[in-house]
Length: 75
View 1 (cartoon, one colour):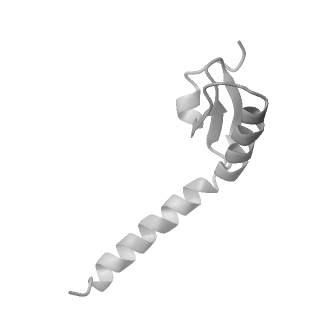
View 2 (tube, one colour):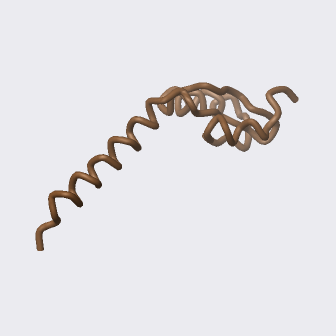
């Protein structure tokens, strides 16, 4: 069974929106202690995460800037 054209367009639009979101400066890197960086595109956040991991900073993850507002910027 072939997917309908409408279904294929909807799936393609959804993928485009997801990719666009990764290119928006809306990502933060947080650690157990504080917000390490904010306002990054996802690729920059991933690089920052790698850089901080190499420095031995624990509890790192990438979240949206909105979620990161709950984490203090300074310890």
